[in-house]
Image (cartoon, rainbow, N blue to C red; front, side):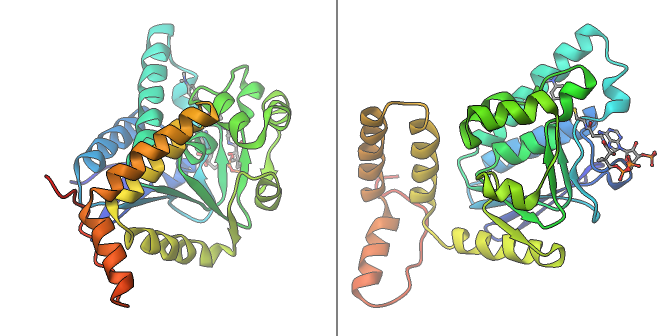
Length: 264
Ligand code: DAK
């Protein structure tokens, strides 16, 4: 299906999604949010996809936040709808059972940083800029930024960024643990895809189990988190993937994972 504000492609187990409003630095319009939400449903329903990579169109931006032109015109009811739709969409992104890499190529501001934070990890070009400048607009982050940023980089650093609205460059974002890898702009996509392909070659059952346990466990106490891990480990052992992985190792060959449980 063709989208107006997003380029979405699937190639084997790898899906790529490019926010595509380069004239507005890929800002999140109501239409873009709807299309993003629709595509996330499509991805969730497609069992062949094992990994998703997000990026922005053009050389300047990943996503420069909510579309301020539209935002400025919303009445209270429209703002409530936008908020509810936005929260649902970002939660859908975080709750995708497959790993998601954000390849941040330039400005990731406001909602752009929040989309990256709801991904599983971030690779950035060395000209990337992150920030939650909502305070400068008289707002606060609305796509989970107050929650996810403080969990990722700690309360005090998150408060400083949110209270000041200051922007930080990729190297600082890496130093404080927001970004896993910083690349030259023309190498970013290649690096993100290289990692995505490594992930896509792993077992779908164990990938999904690992993501679920990490995401759910981080909000639980250690004993509960470890119990979740035990249950998920048992589920993996009941998969053809675990049988294939262990037997391939013993036979000194590469595994061929099918992403299936034995009894389905
Ligand atoms: N919205 C609309 N257009 C934007 C835009 C945005 N966020 N960002 C940039 N553009 C447009 C510019 O207006 C300009 O358009 P033309 O004038 O060429 O027509 C074009 O993109 C190029 O931008 P600049 O000329 O400004 O480019 P510069 O290199 O000079 O500056 C910049 C780049 C990224 C520093 C600057 O454009 C900028 O500060 N942009 C705004 C960043 C920002 O404040 N973003 C919004 C953050 S607030 C909610 C949930 C979430 C949110 C809200 C509600 N609810 C749940 C209710 C999210 C809020 C946000 O994201």
